[in-house]
Amino acid sequence: MRALTAMVAMACAATGAEAQPQAQAQPQAQAQPQAQALEEIVVTGERTGPGLWHVQHGDAQVWILGSMSPLPKGITWRSKQVEQVLGTTSQVLVQKPFEIGIARILWLLLTERSLLMVGGGKRLHDVLPADLYARFAAQRAKYHEDAGKWERFRPLIAAAFLEQAAFHDVGLSARLDLGAALRTLAKKHGVRVEEVKIAGVGDVLDALKTMPPATENACVAASLVTVESGLPRLLDRAQAWASGNVERIGQLREAAEVDACRAALDAGAGPAEFIARIRRTWLEAIEKYLQHAGVTVAVVNFDLLLEPGGLLDELRARGYQVDAP
Image (cartoon, rainbow, N blue to C red; front, side):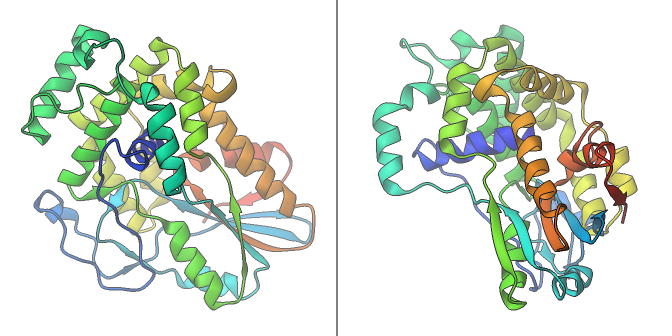
């Protein structure tokens, strides 16, 4: 679910709808000071993140590093284990960056803006259920002085921007790219990088075209509960990730509303089938390299790995040997 809201926010930013703060993970630098709200769990110095899952099939090996989002904006990352594995690795699999060119931006502004905005002269308060709108307005007042901020956006997009504003306020970012750090290390070791295309702006727009209102409202509720009460959990997860505490991450379950959004998306068909498509794409990419001798390193979202029936469970079900960190 969080992958979807992040992609929606980035798609809107790319089309000029809203500017968002950006940051990138660096492989080896001193961390910058965090926002005051993050003082108790400031992540400083080099952090390794969790260990690597090891998937094996005969002479084929895939090492999987779990990525996390959001993370503290100033976090730095370096894993000696990853660097050691790269010494024998044939290729690194990372998600293709979510990018868009200026020509595409201009075209989207002309042709697809109606997908991003509330049409017919209406505003957000006209289309969002009253209880959800009241919660949205209450949280918006905490993070923005403009009482009409995001009123022209459709519900899912307005909620995505609110969530990003809340992350920014507590020193978190959904844009930190662990894949970028792995690209740097792969280049250092002369290892080929293969980009796995998960979704692009066009996929997000296709999903917005077909998403039922009930699904959209379920995901708005998920974003709202994250902003209202879920930020401490996200901060706790970020600290657990930075210290390599996989067990703690597994204990920090999502709110019921987030599970409901994920279930609604999973039940969708065609372009709206976001999460299932992401799982299938990663499974196909990893299985391809489990059919031939060699060593591969992959960077995959933690939630996709650990969720019940997720990527690790699916690999085990298909007969591959999966060893935890």
